[in-house]
Amino acid sequence: MYRTPSPDRITEYLRRLREDPQSVNAPDWRVDYPDGPWPVKVHQSGTRVSPEGPLARVLGGSVAVTAVRGPRTTLRRAVPSGGAMHPTEVYVLCAHTDRLWHVDPYRMELLALPADRPSRLLCVGLRLAPGAALPPVVLVLTSRFWKNFYKYGNFSFRLGAVDAGVVLGRVLRLAEAEFGTALVRTDFVDATVNAALGLDGRDESVYAVVGCGPVEADGAAGRVDPAPIEAPSVLERSRRVKRSLMFDFVQASAQVLPPDPVAFRAAPEVASRVGAVALPAAASVDLNDPRVIVRRRSGGRAFTGHPVDPATLSTVLCHAEAAGAQLRDRADPAVPDIRLFVAVHRVRGVPTGWYAYRPDLLAPAGRGPDPGLGPRLQEALFGSGVNAELAAFTVHVVASPRHGCRSARHYRTQQLAVGVAIEATVLAATAVDLGNHPFLGFDAGAVDAAYGLDGQDSGAQAQICVGAVHAGDEWEVAVRPR
Ligand SMILES: Cc1cc2nc3c(=O)[nH]c(=O)nc-3n(C[C@H](O)[C@H](O)[C@H](O)COP(=O)(O)O)c2cc1C
Figure 1 (cartoon, protein in one colour):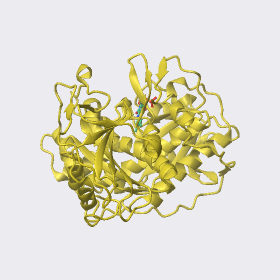
Figure 2 (spheres, protein in one colour):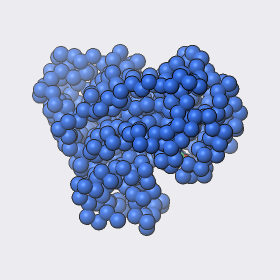
Figure 3 (spheres, protein in one colour):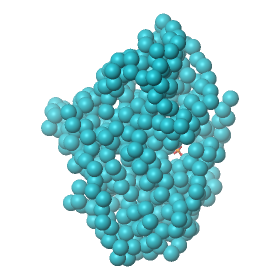
Figure 4 (cartoon, protein in one colour):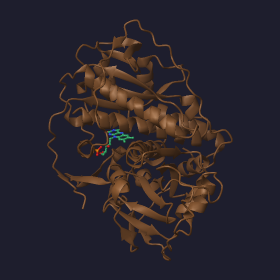
């Protein structure tokens, strides 16, 4: 369909990623499953060390492999990822030694990379003065395109950005707890940051940068360890790495920082209090608890249909909202706001219906009370593996389609914020012992219509079904850190 991509096509492509995602691949698009990539980026040779202390806990709680599960021996990680593709890679720059490392999430090791004084280039990429002070540890999140493209083709531009947002949300929360403070940048010059990492930007490119700990004036001026001379080679399992003109074109376009990356700020809405449902106080749960992190899974296939207490709904929404607020506080102004809506149908004392979430209440939205909500949600799902009708409630992450379609870069940054909300929702649901399942594969137009969002420049970007689950019957073996 997209034989000759032109800049005008980008807006239409970005719009379709949400409104008609199944149309962004050519009708003859097929996945070549036997020729898929490895589940992690594989390097041959090189020097490896084990991360320790706060860094180990941040990486262990975010990108680490936590389990092996059947029947296809899929690797589960601490975070969810569309189709278990996990395309987000993490690089670590240690400002004290000015050394760069790639994170091996399988062995939970750091692999030394041969970058010469990478902090200088990173500073330029971040539009800081060369040699400016950096936080002691800087984590760079990239997307490795083939990991996702192999299965999802052109749709992976959206999925890869949301996936990186999921990792970003987890890293930000853990880094703030472990290092005392953390900040997020998305408004960098991609080509320069990629150059600092030794990436070409065509197969893998930077999506977000997280500074961990307070900026130290003498950071980069400290001891500089000699970098390894030889780059460890990357092994690719796939014999054929397919490409698409449209995908490459949009990726390249997203690497251009627009003159005005600043996000519109949504005006606070005056929610109708007519028919509003007051929510009980949220429970205090620790989302950094490693026991919660390893329990997380996308367990929608095991929803039982049992009703849940309103405090669990309140807790999940409160933590998802808090993650959005934390991102807004810690990130550059290019990161836009997102809002939360929720379709409730099995929560004790809450009438079945469509609601906008406000910190202390649920305000009816669109159809409002709706006994047909369950079947409507199920009908809106593209796949049939999960019965959304049996969930207790479904959270919708809402953001401005117009803002997202301003440019491929605005879109990418917006989808990071969507991923942050997904991450907090699934983890808070796990913390209150509820099963959960995130989705991008649903009919966003149908959901917008149910909430009365059509024509409002607000649209559902992701959904997370949450509810009681029974123990799954799939075998799983936990991976223990060494
Ligand atoms: C951004 C995102 C989108 C997802 N979209 C879907 C979806 O459309 N359909 C689905 O069944 N699962 C979806 N999932 C769930 C993944 O398939 C699941 O996370 C993955 O298989 C890994 O399993 P785990 O979460 O149990 O570790 C999505 C997950 C993420 C993070």
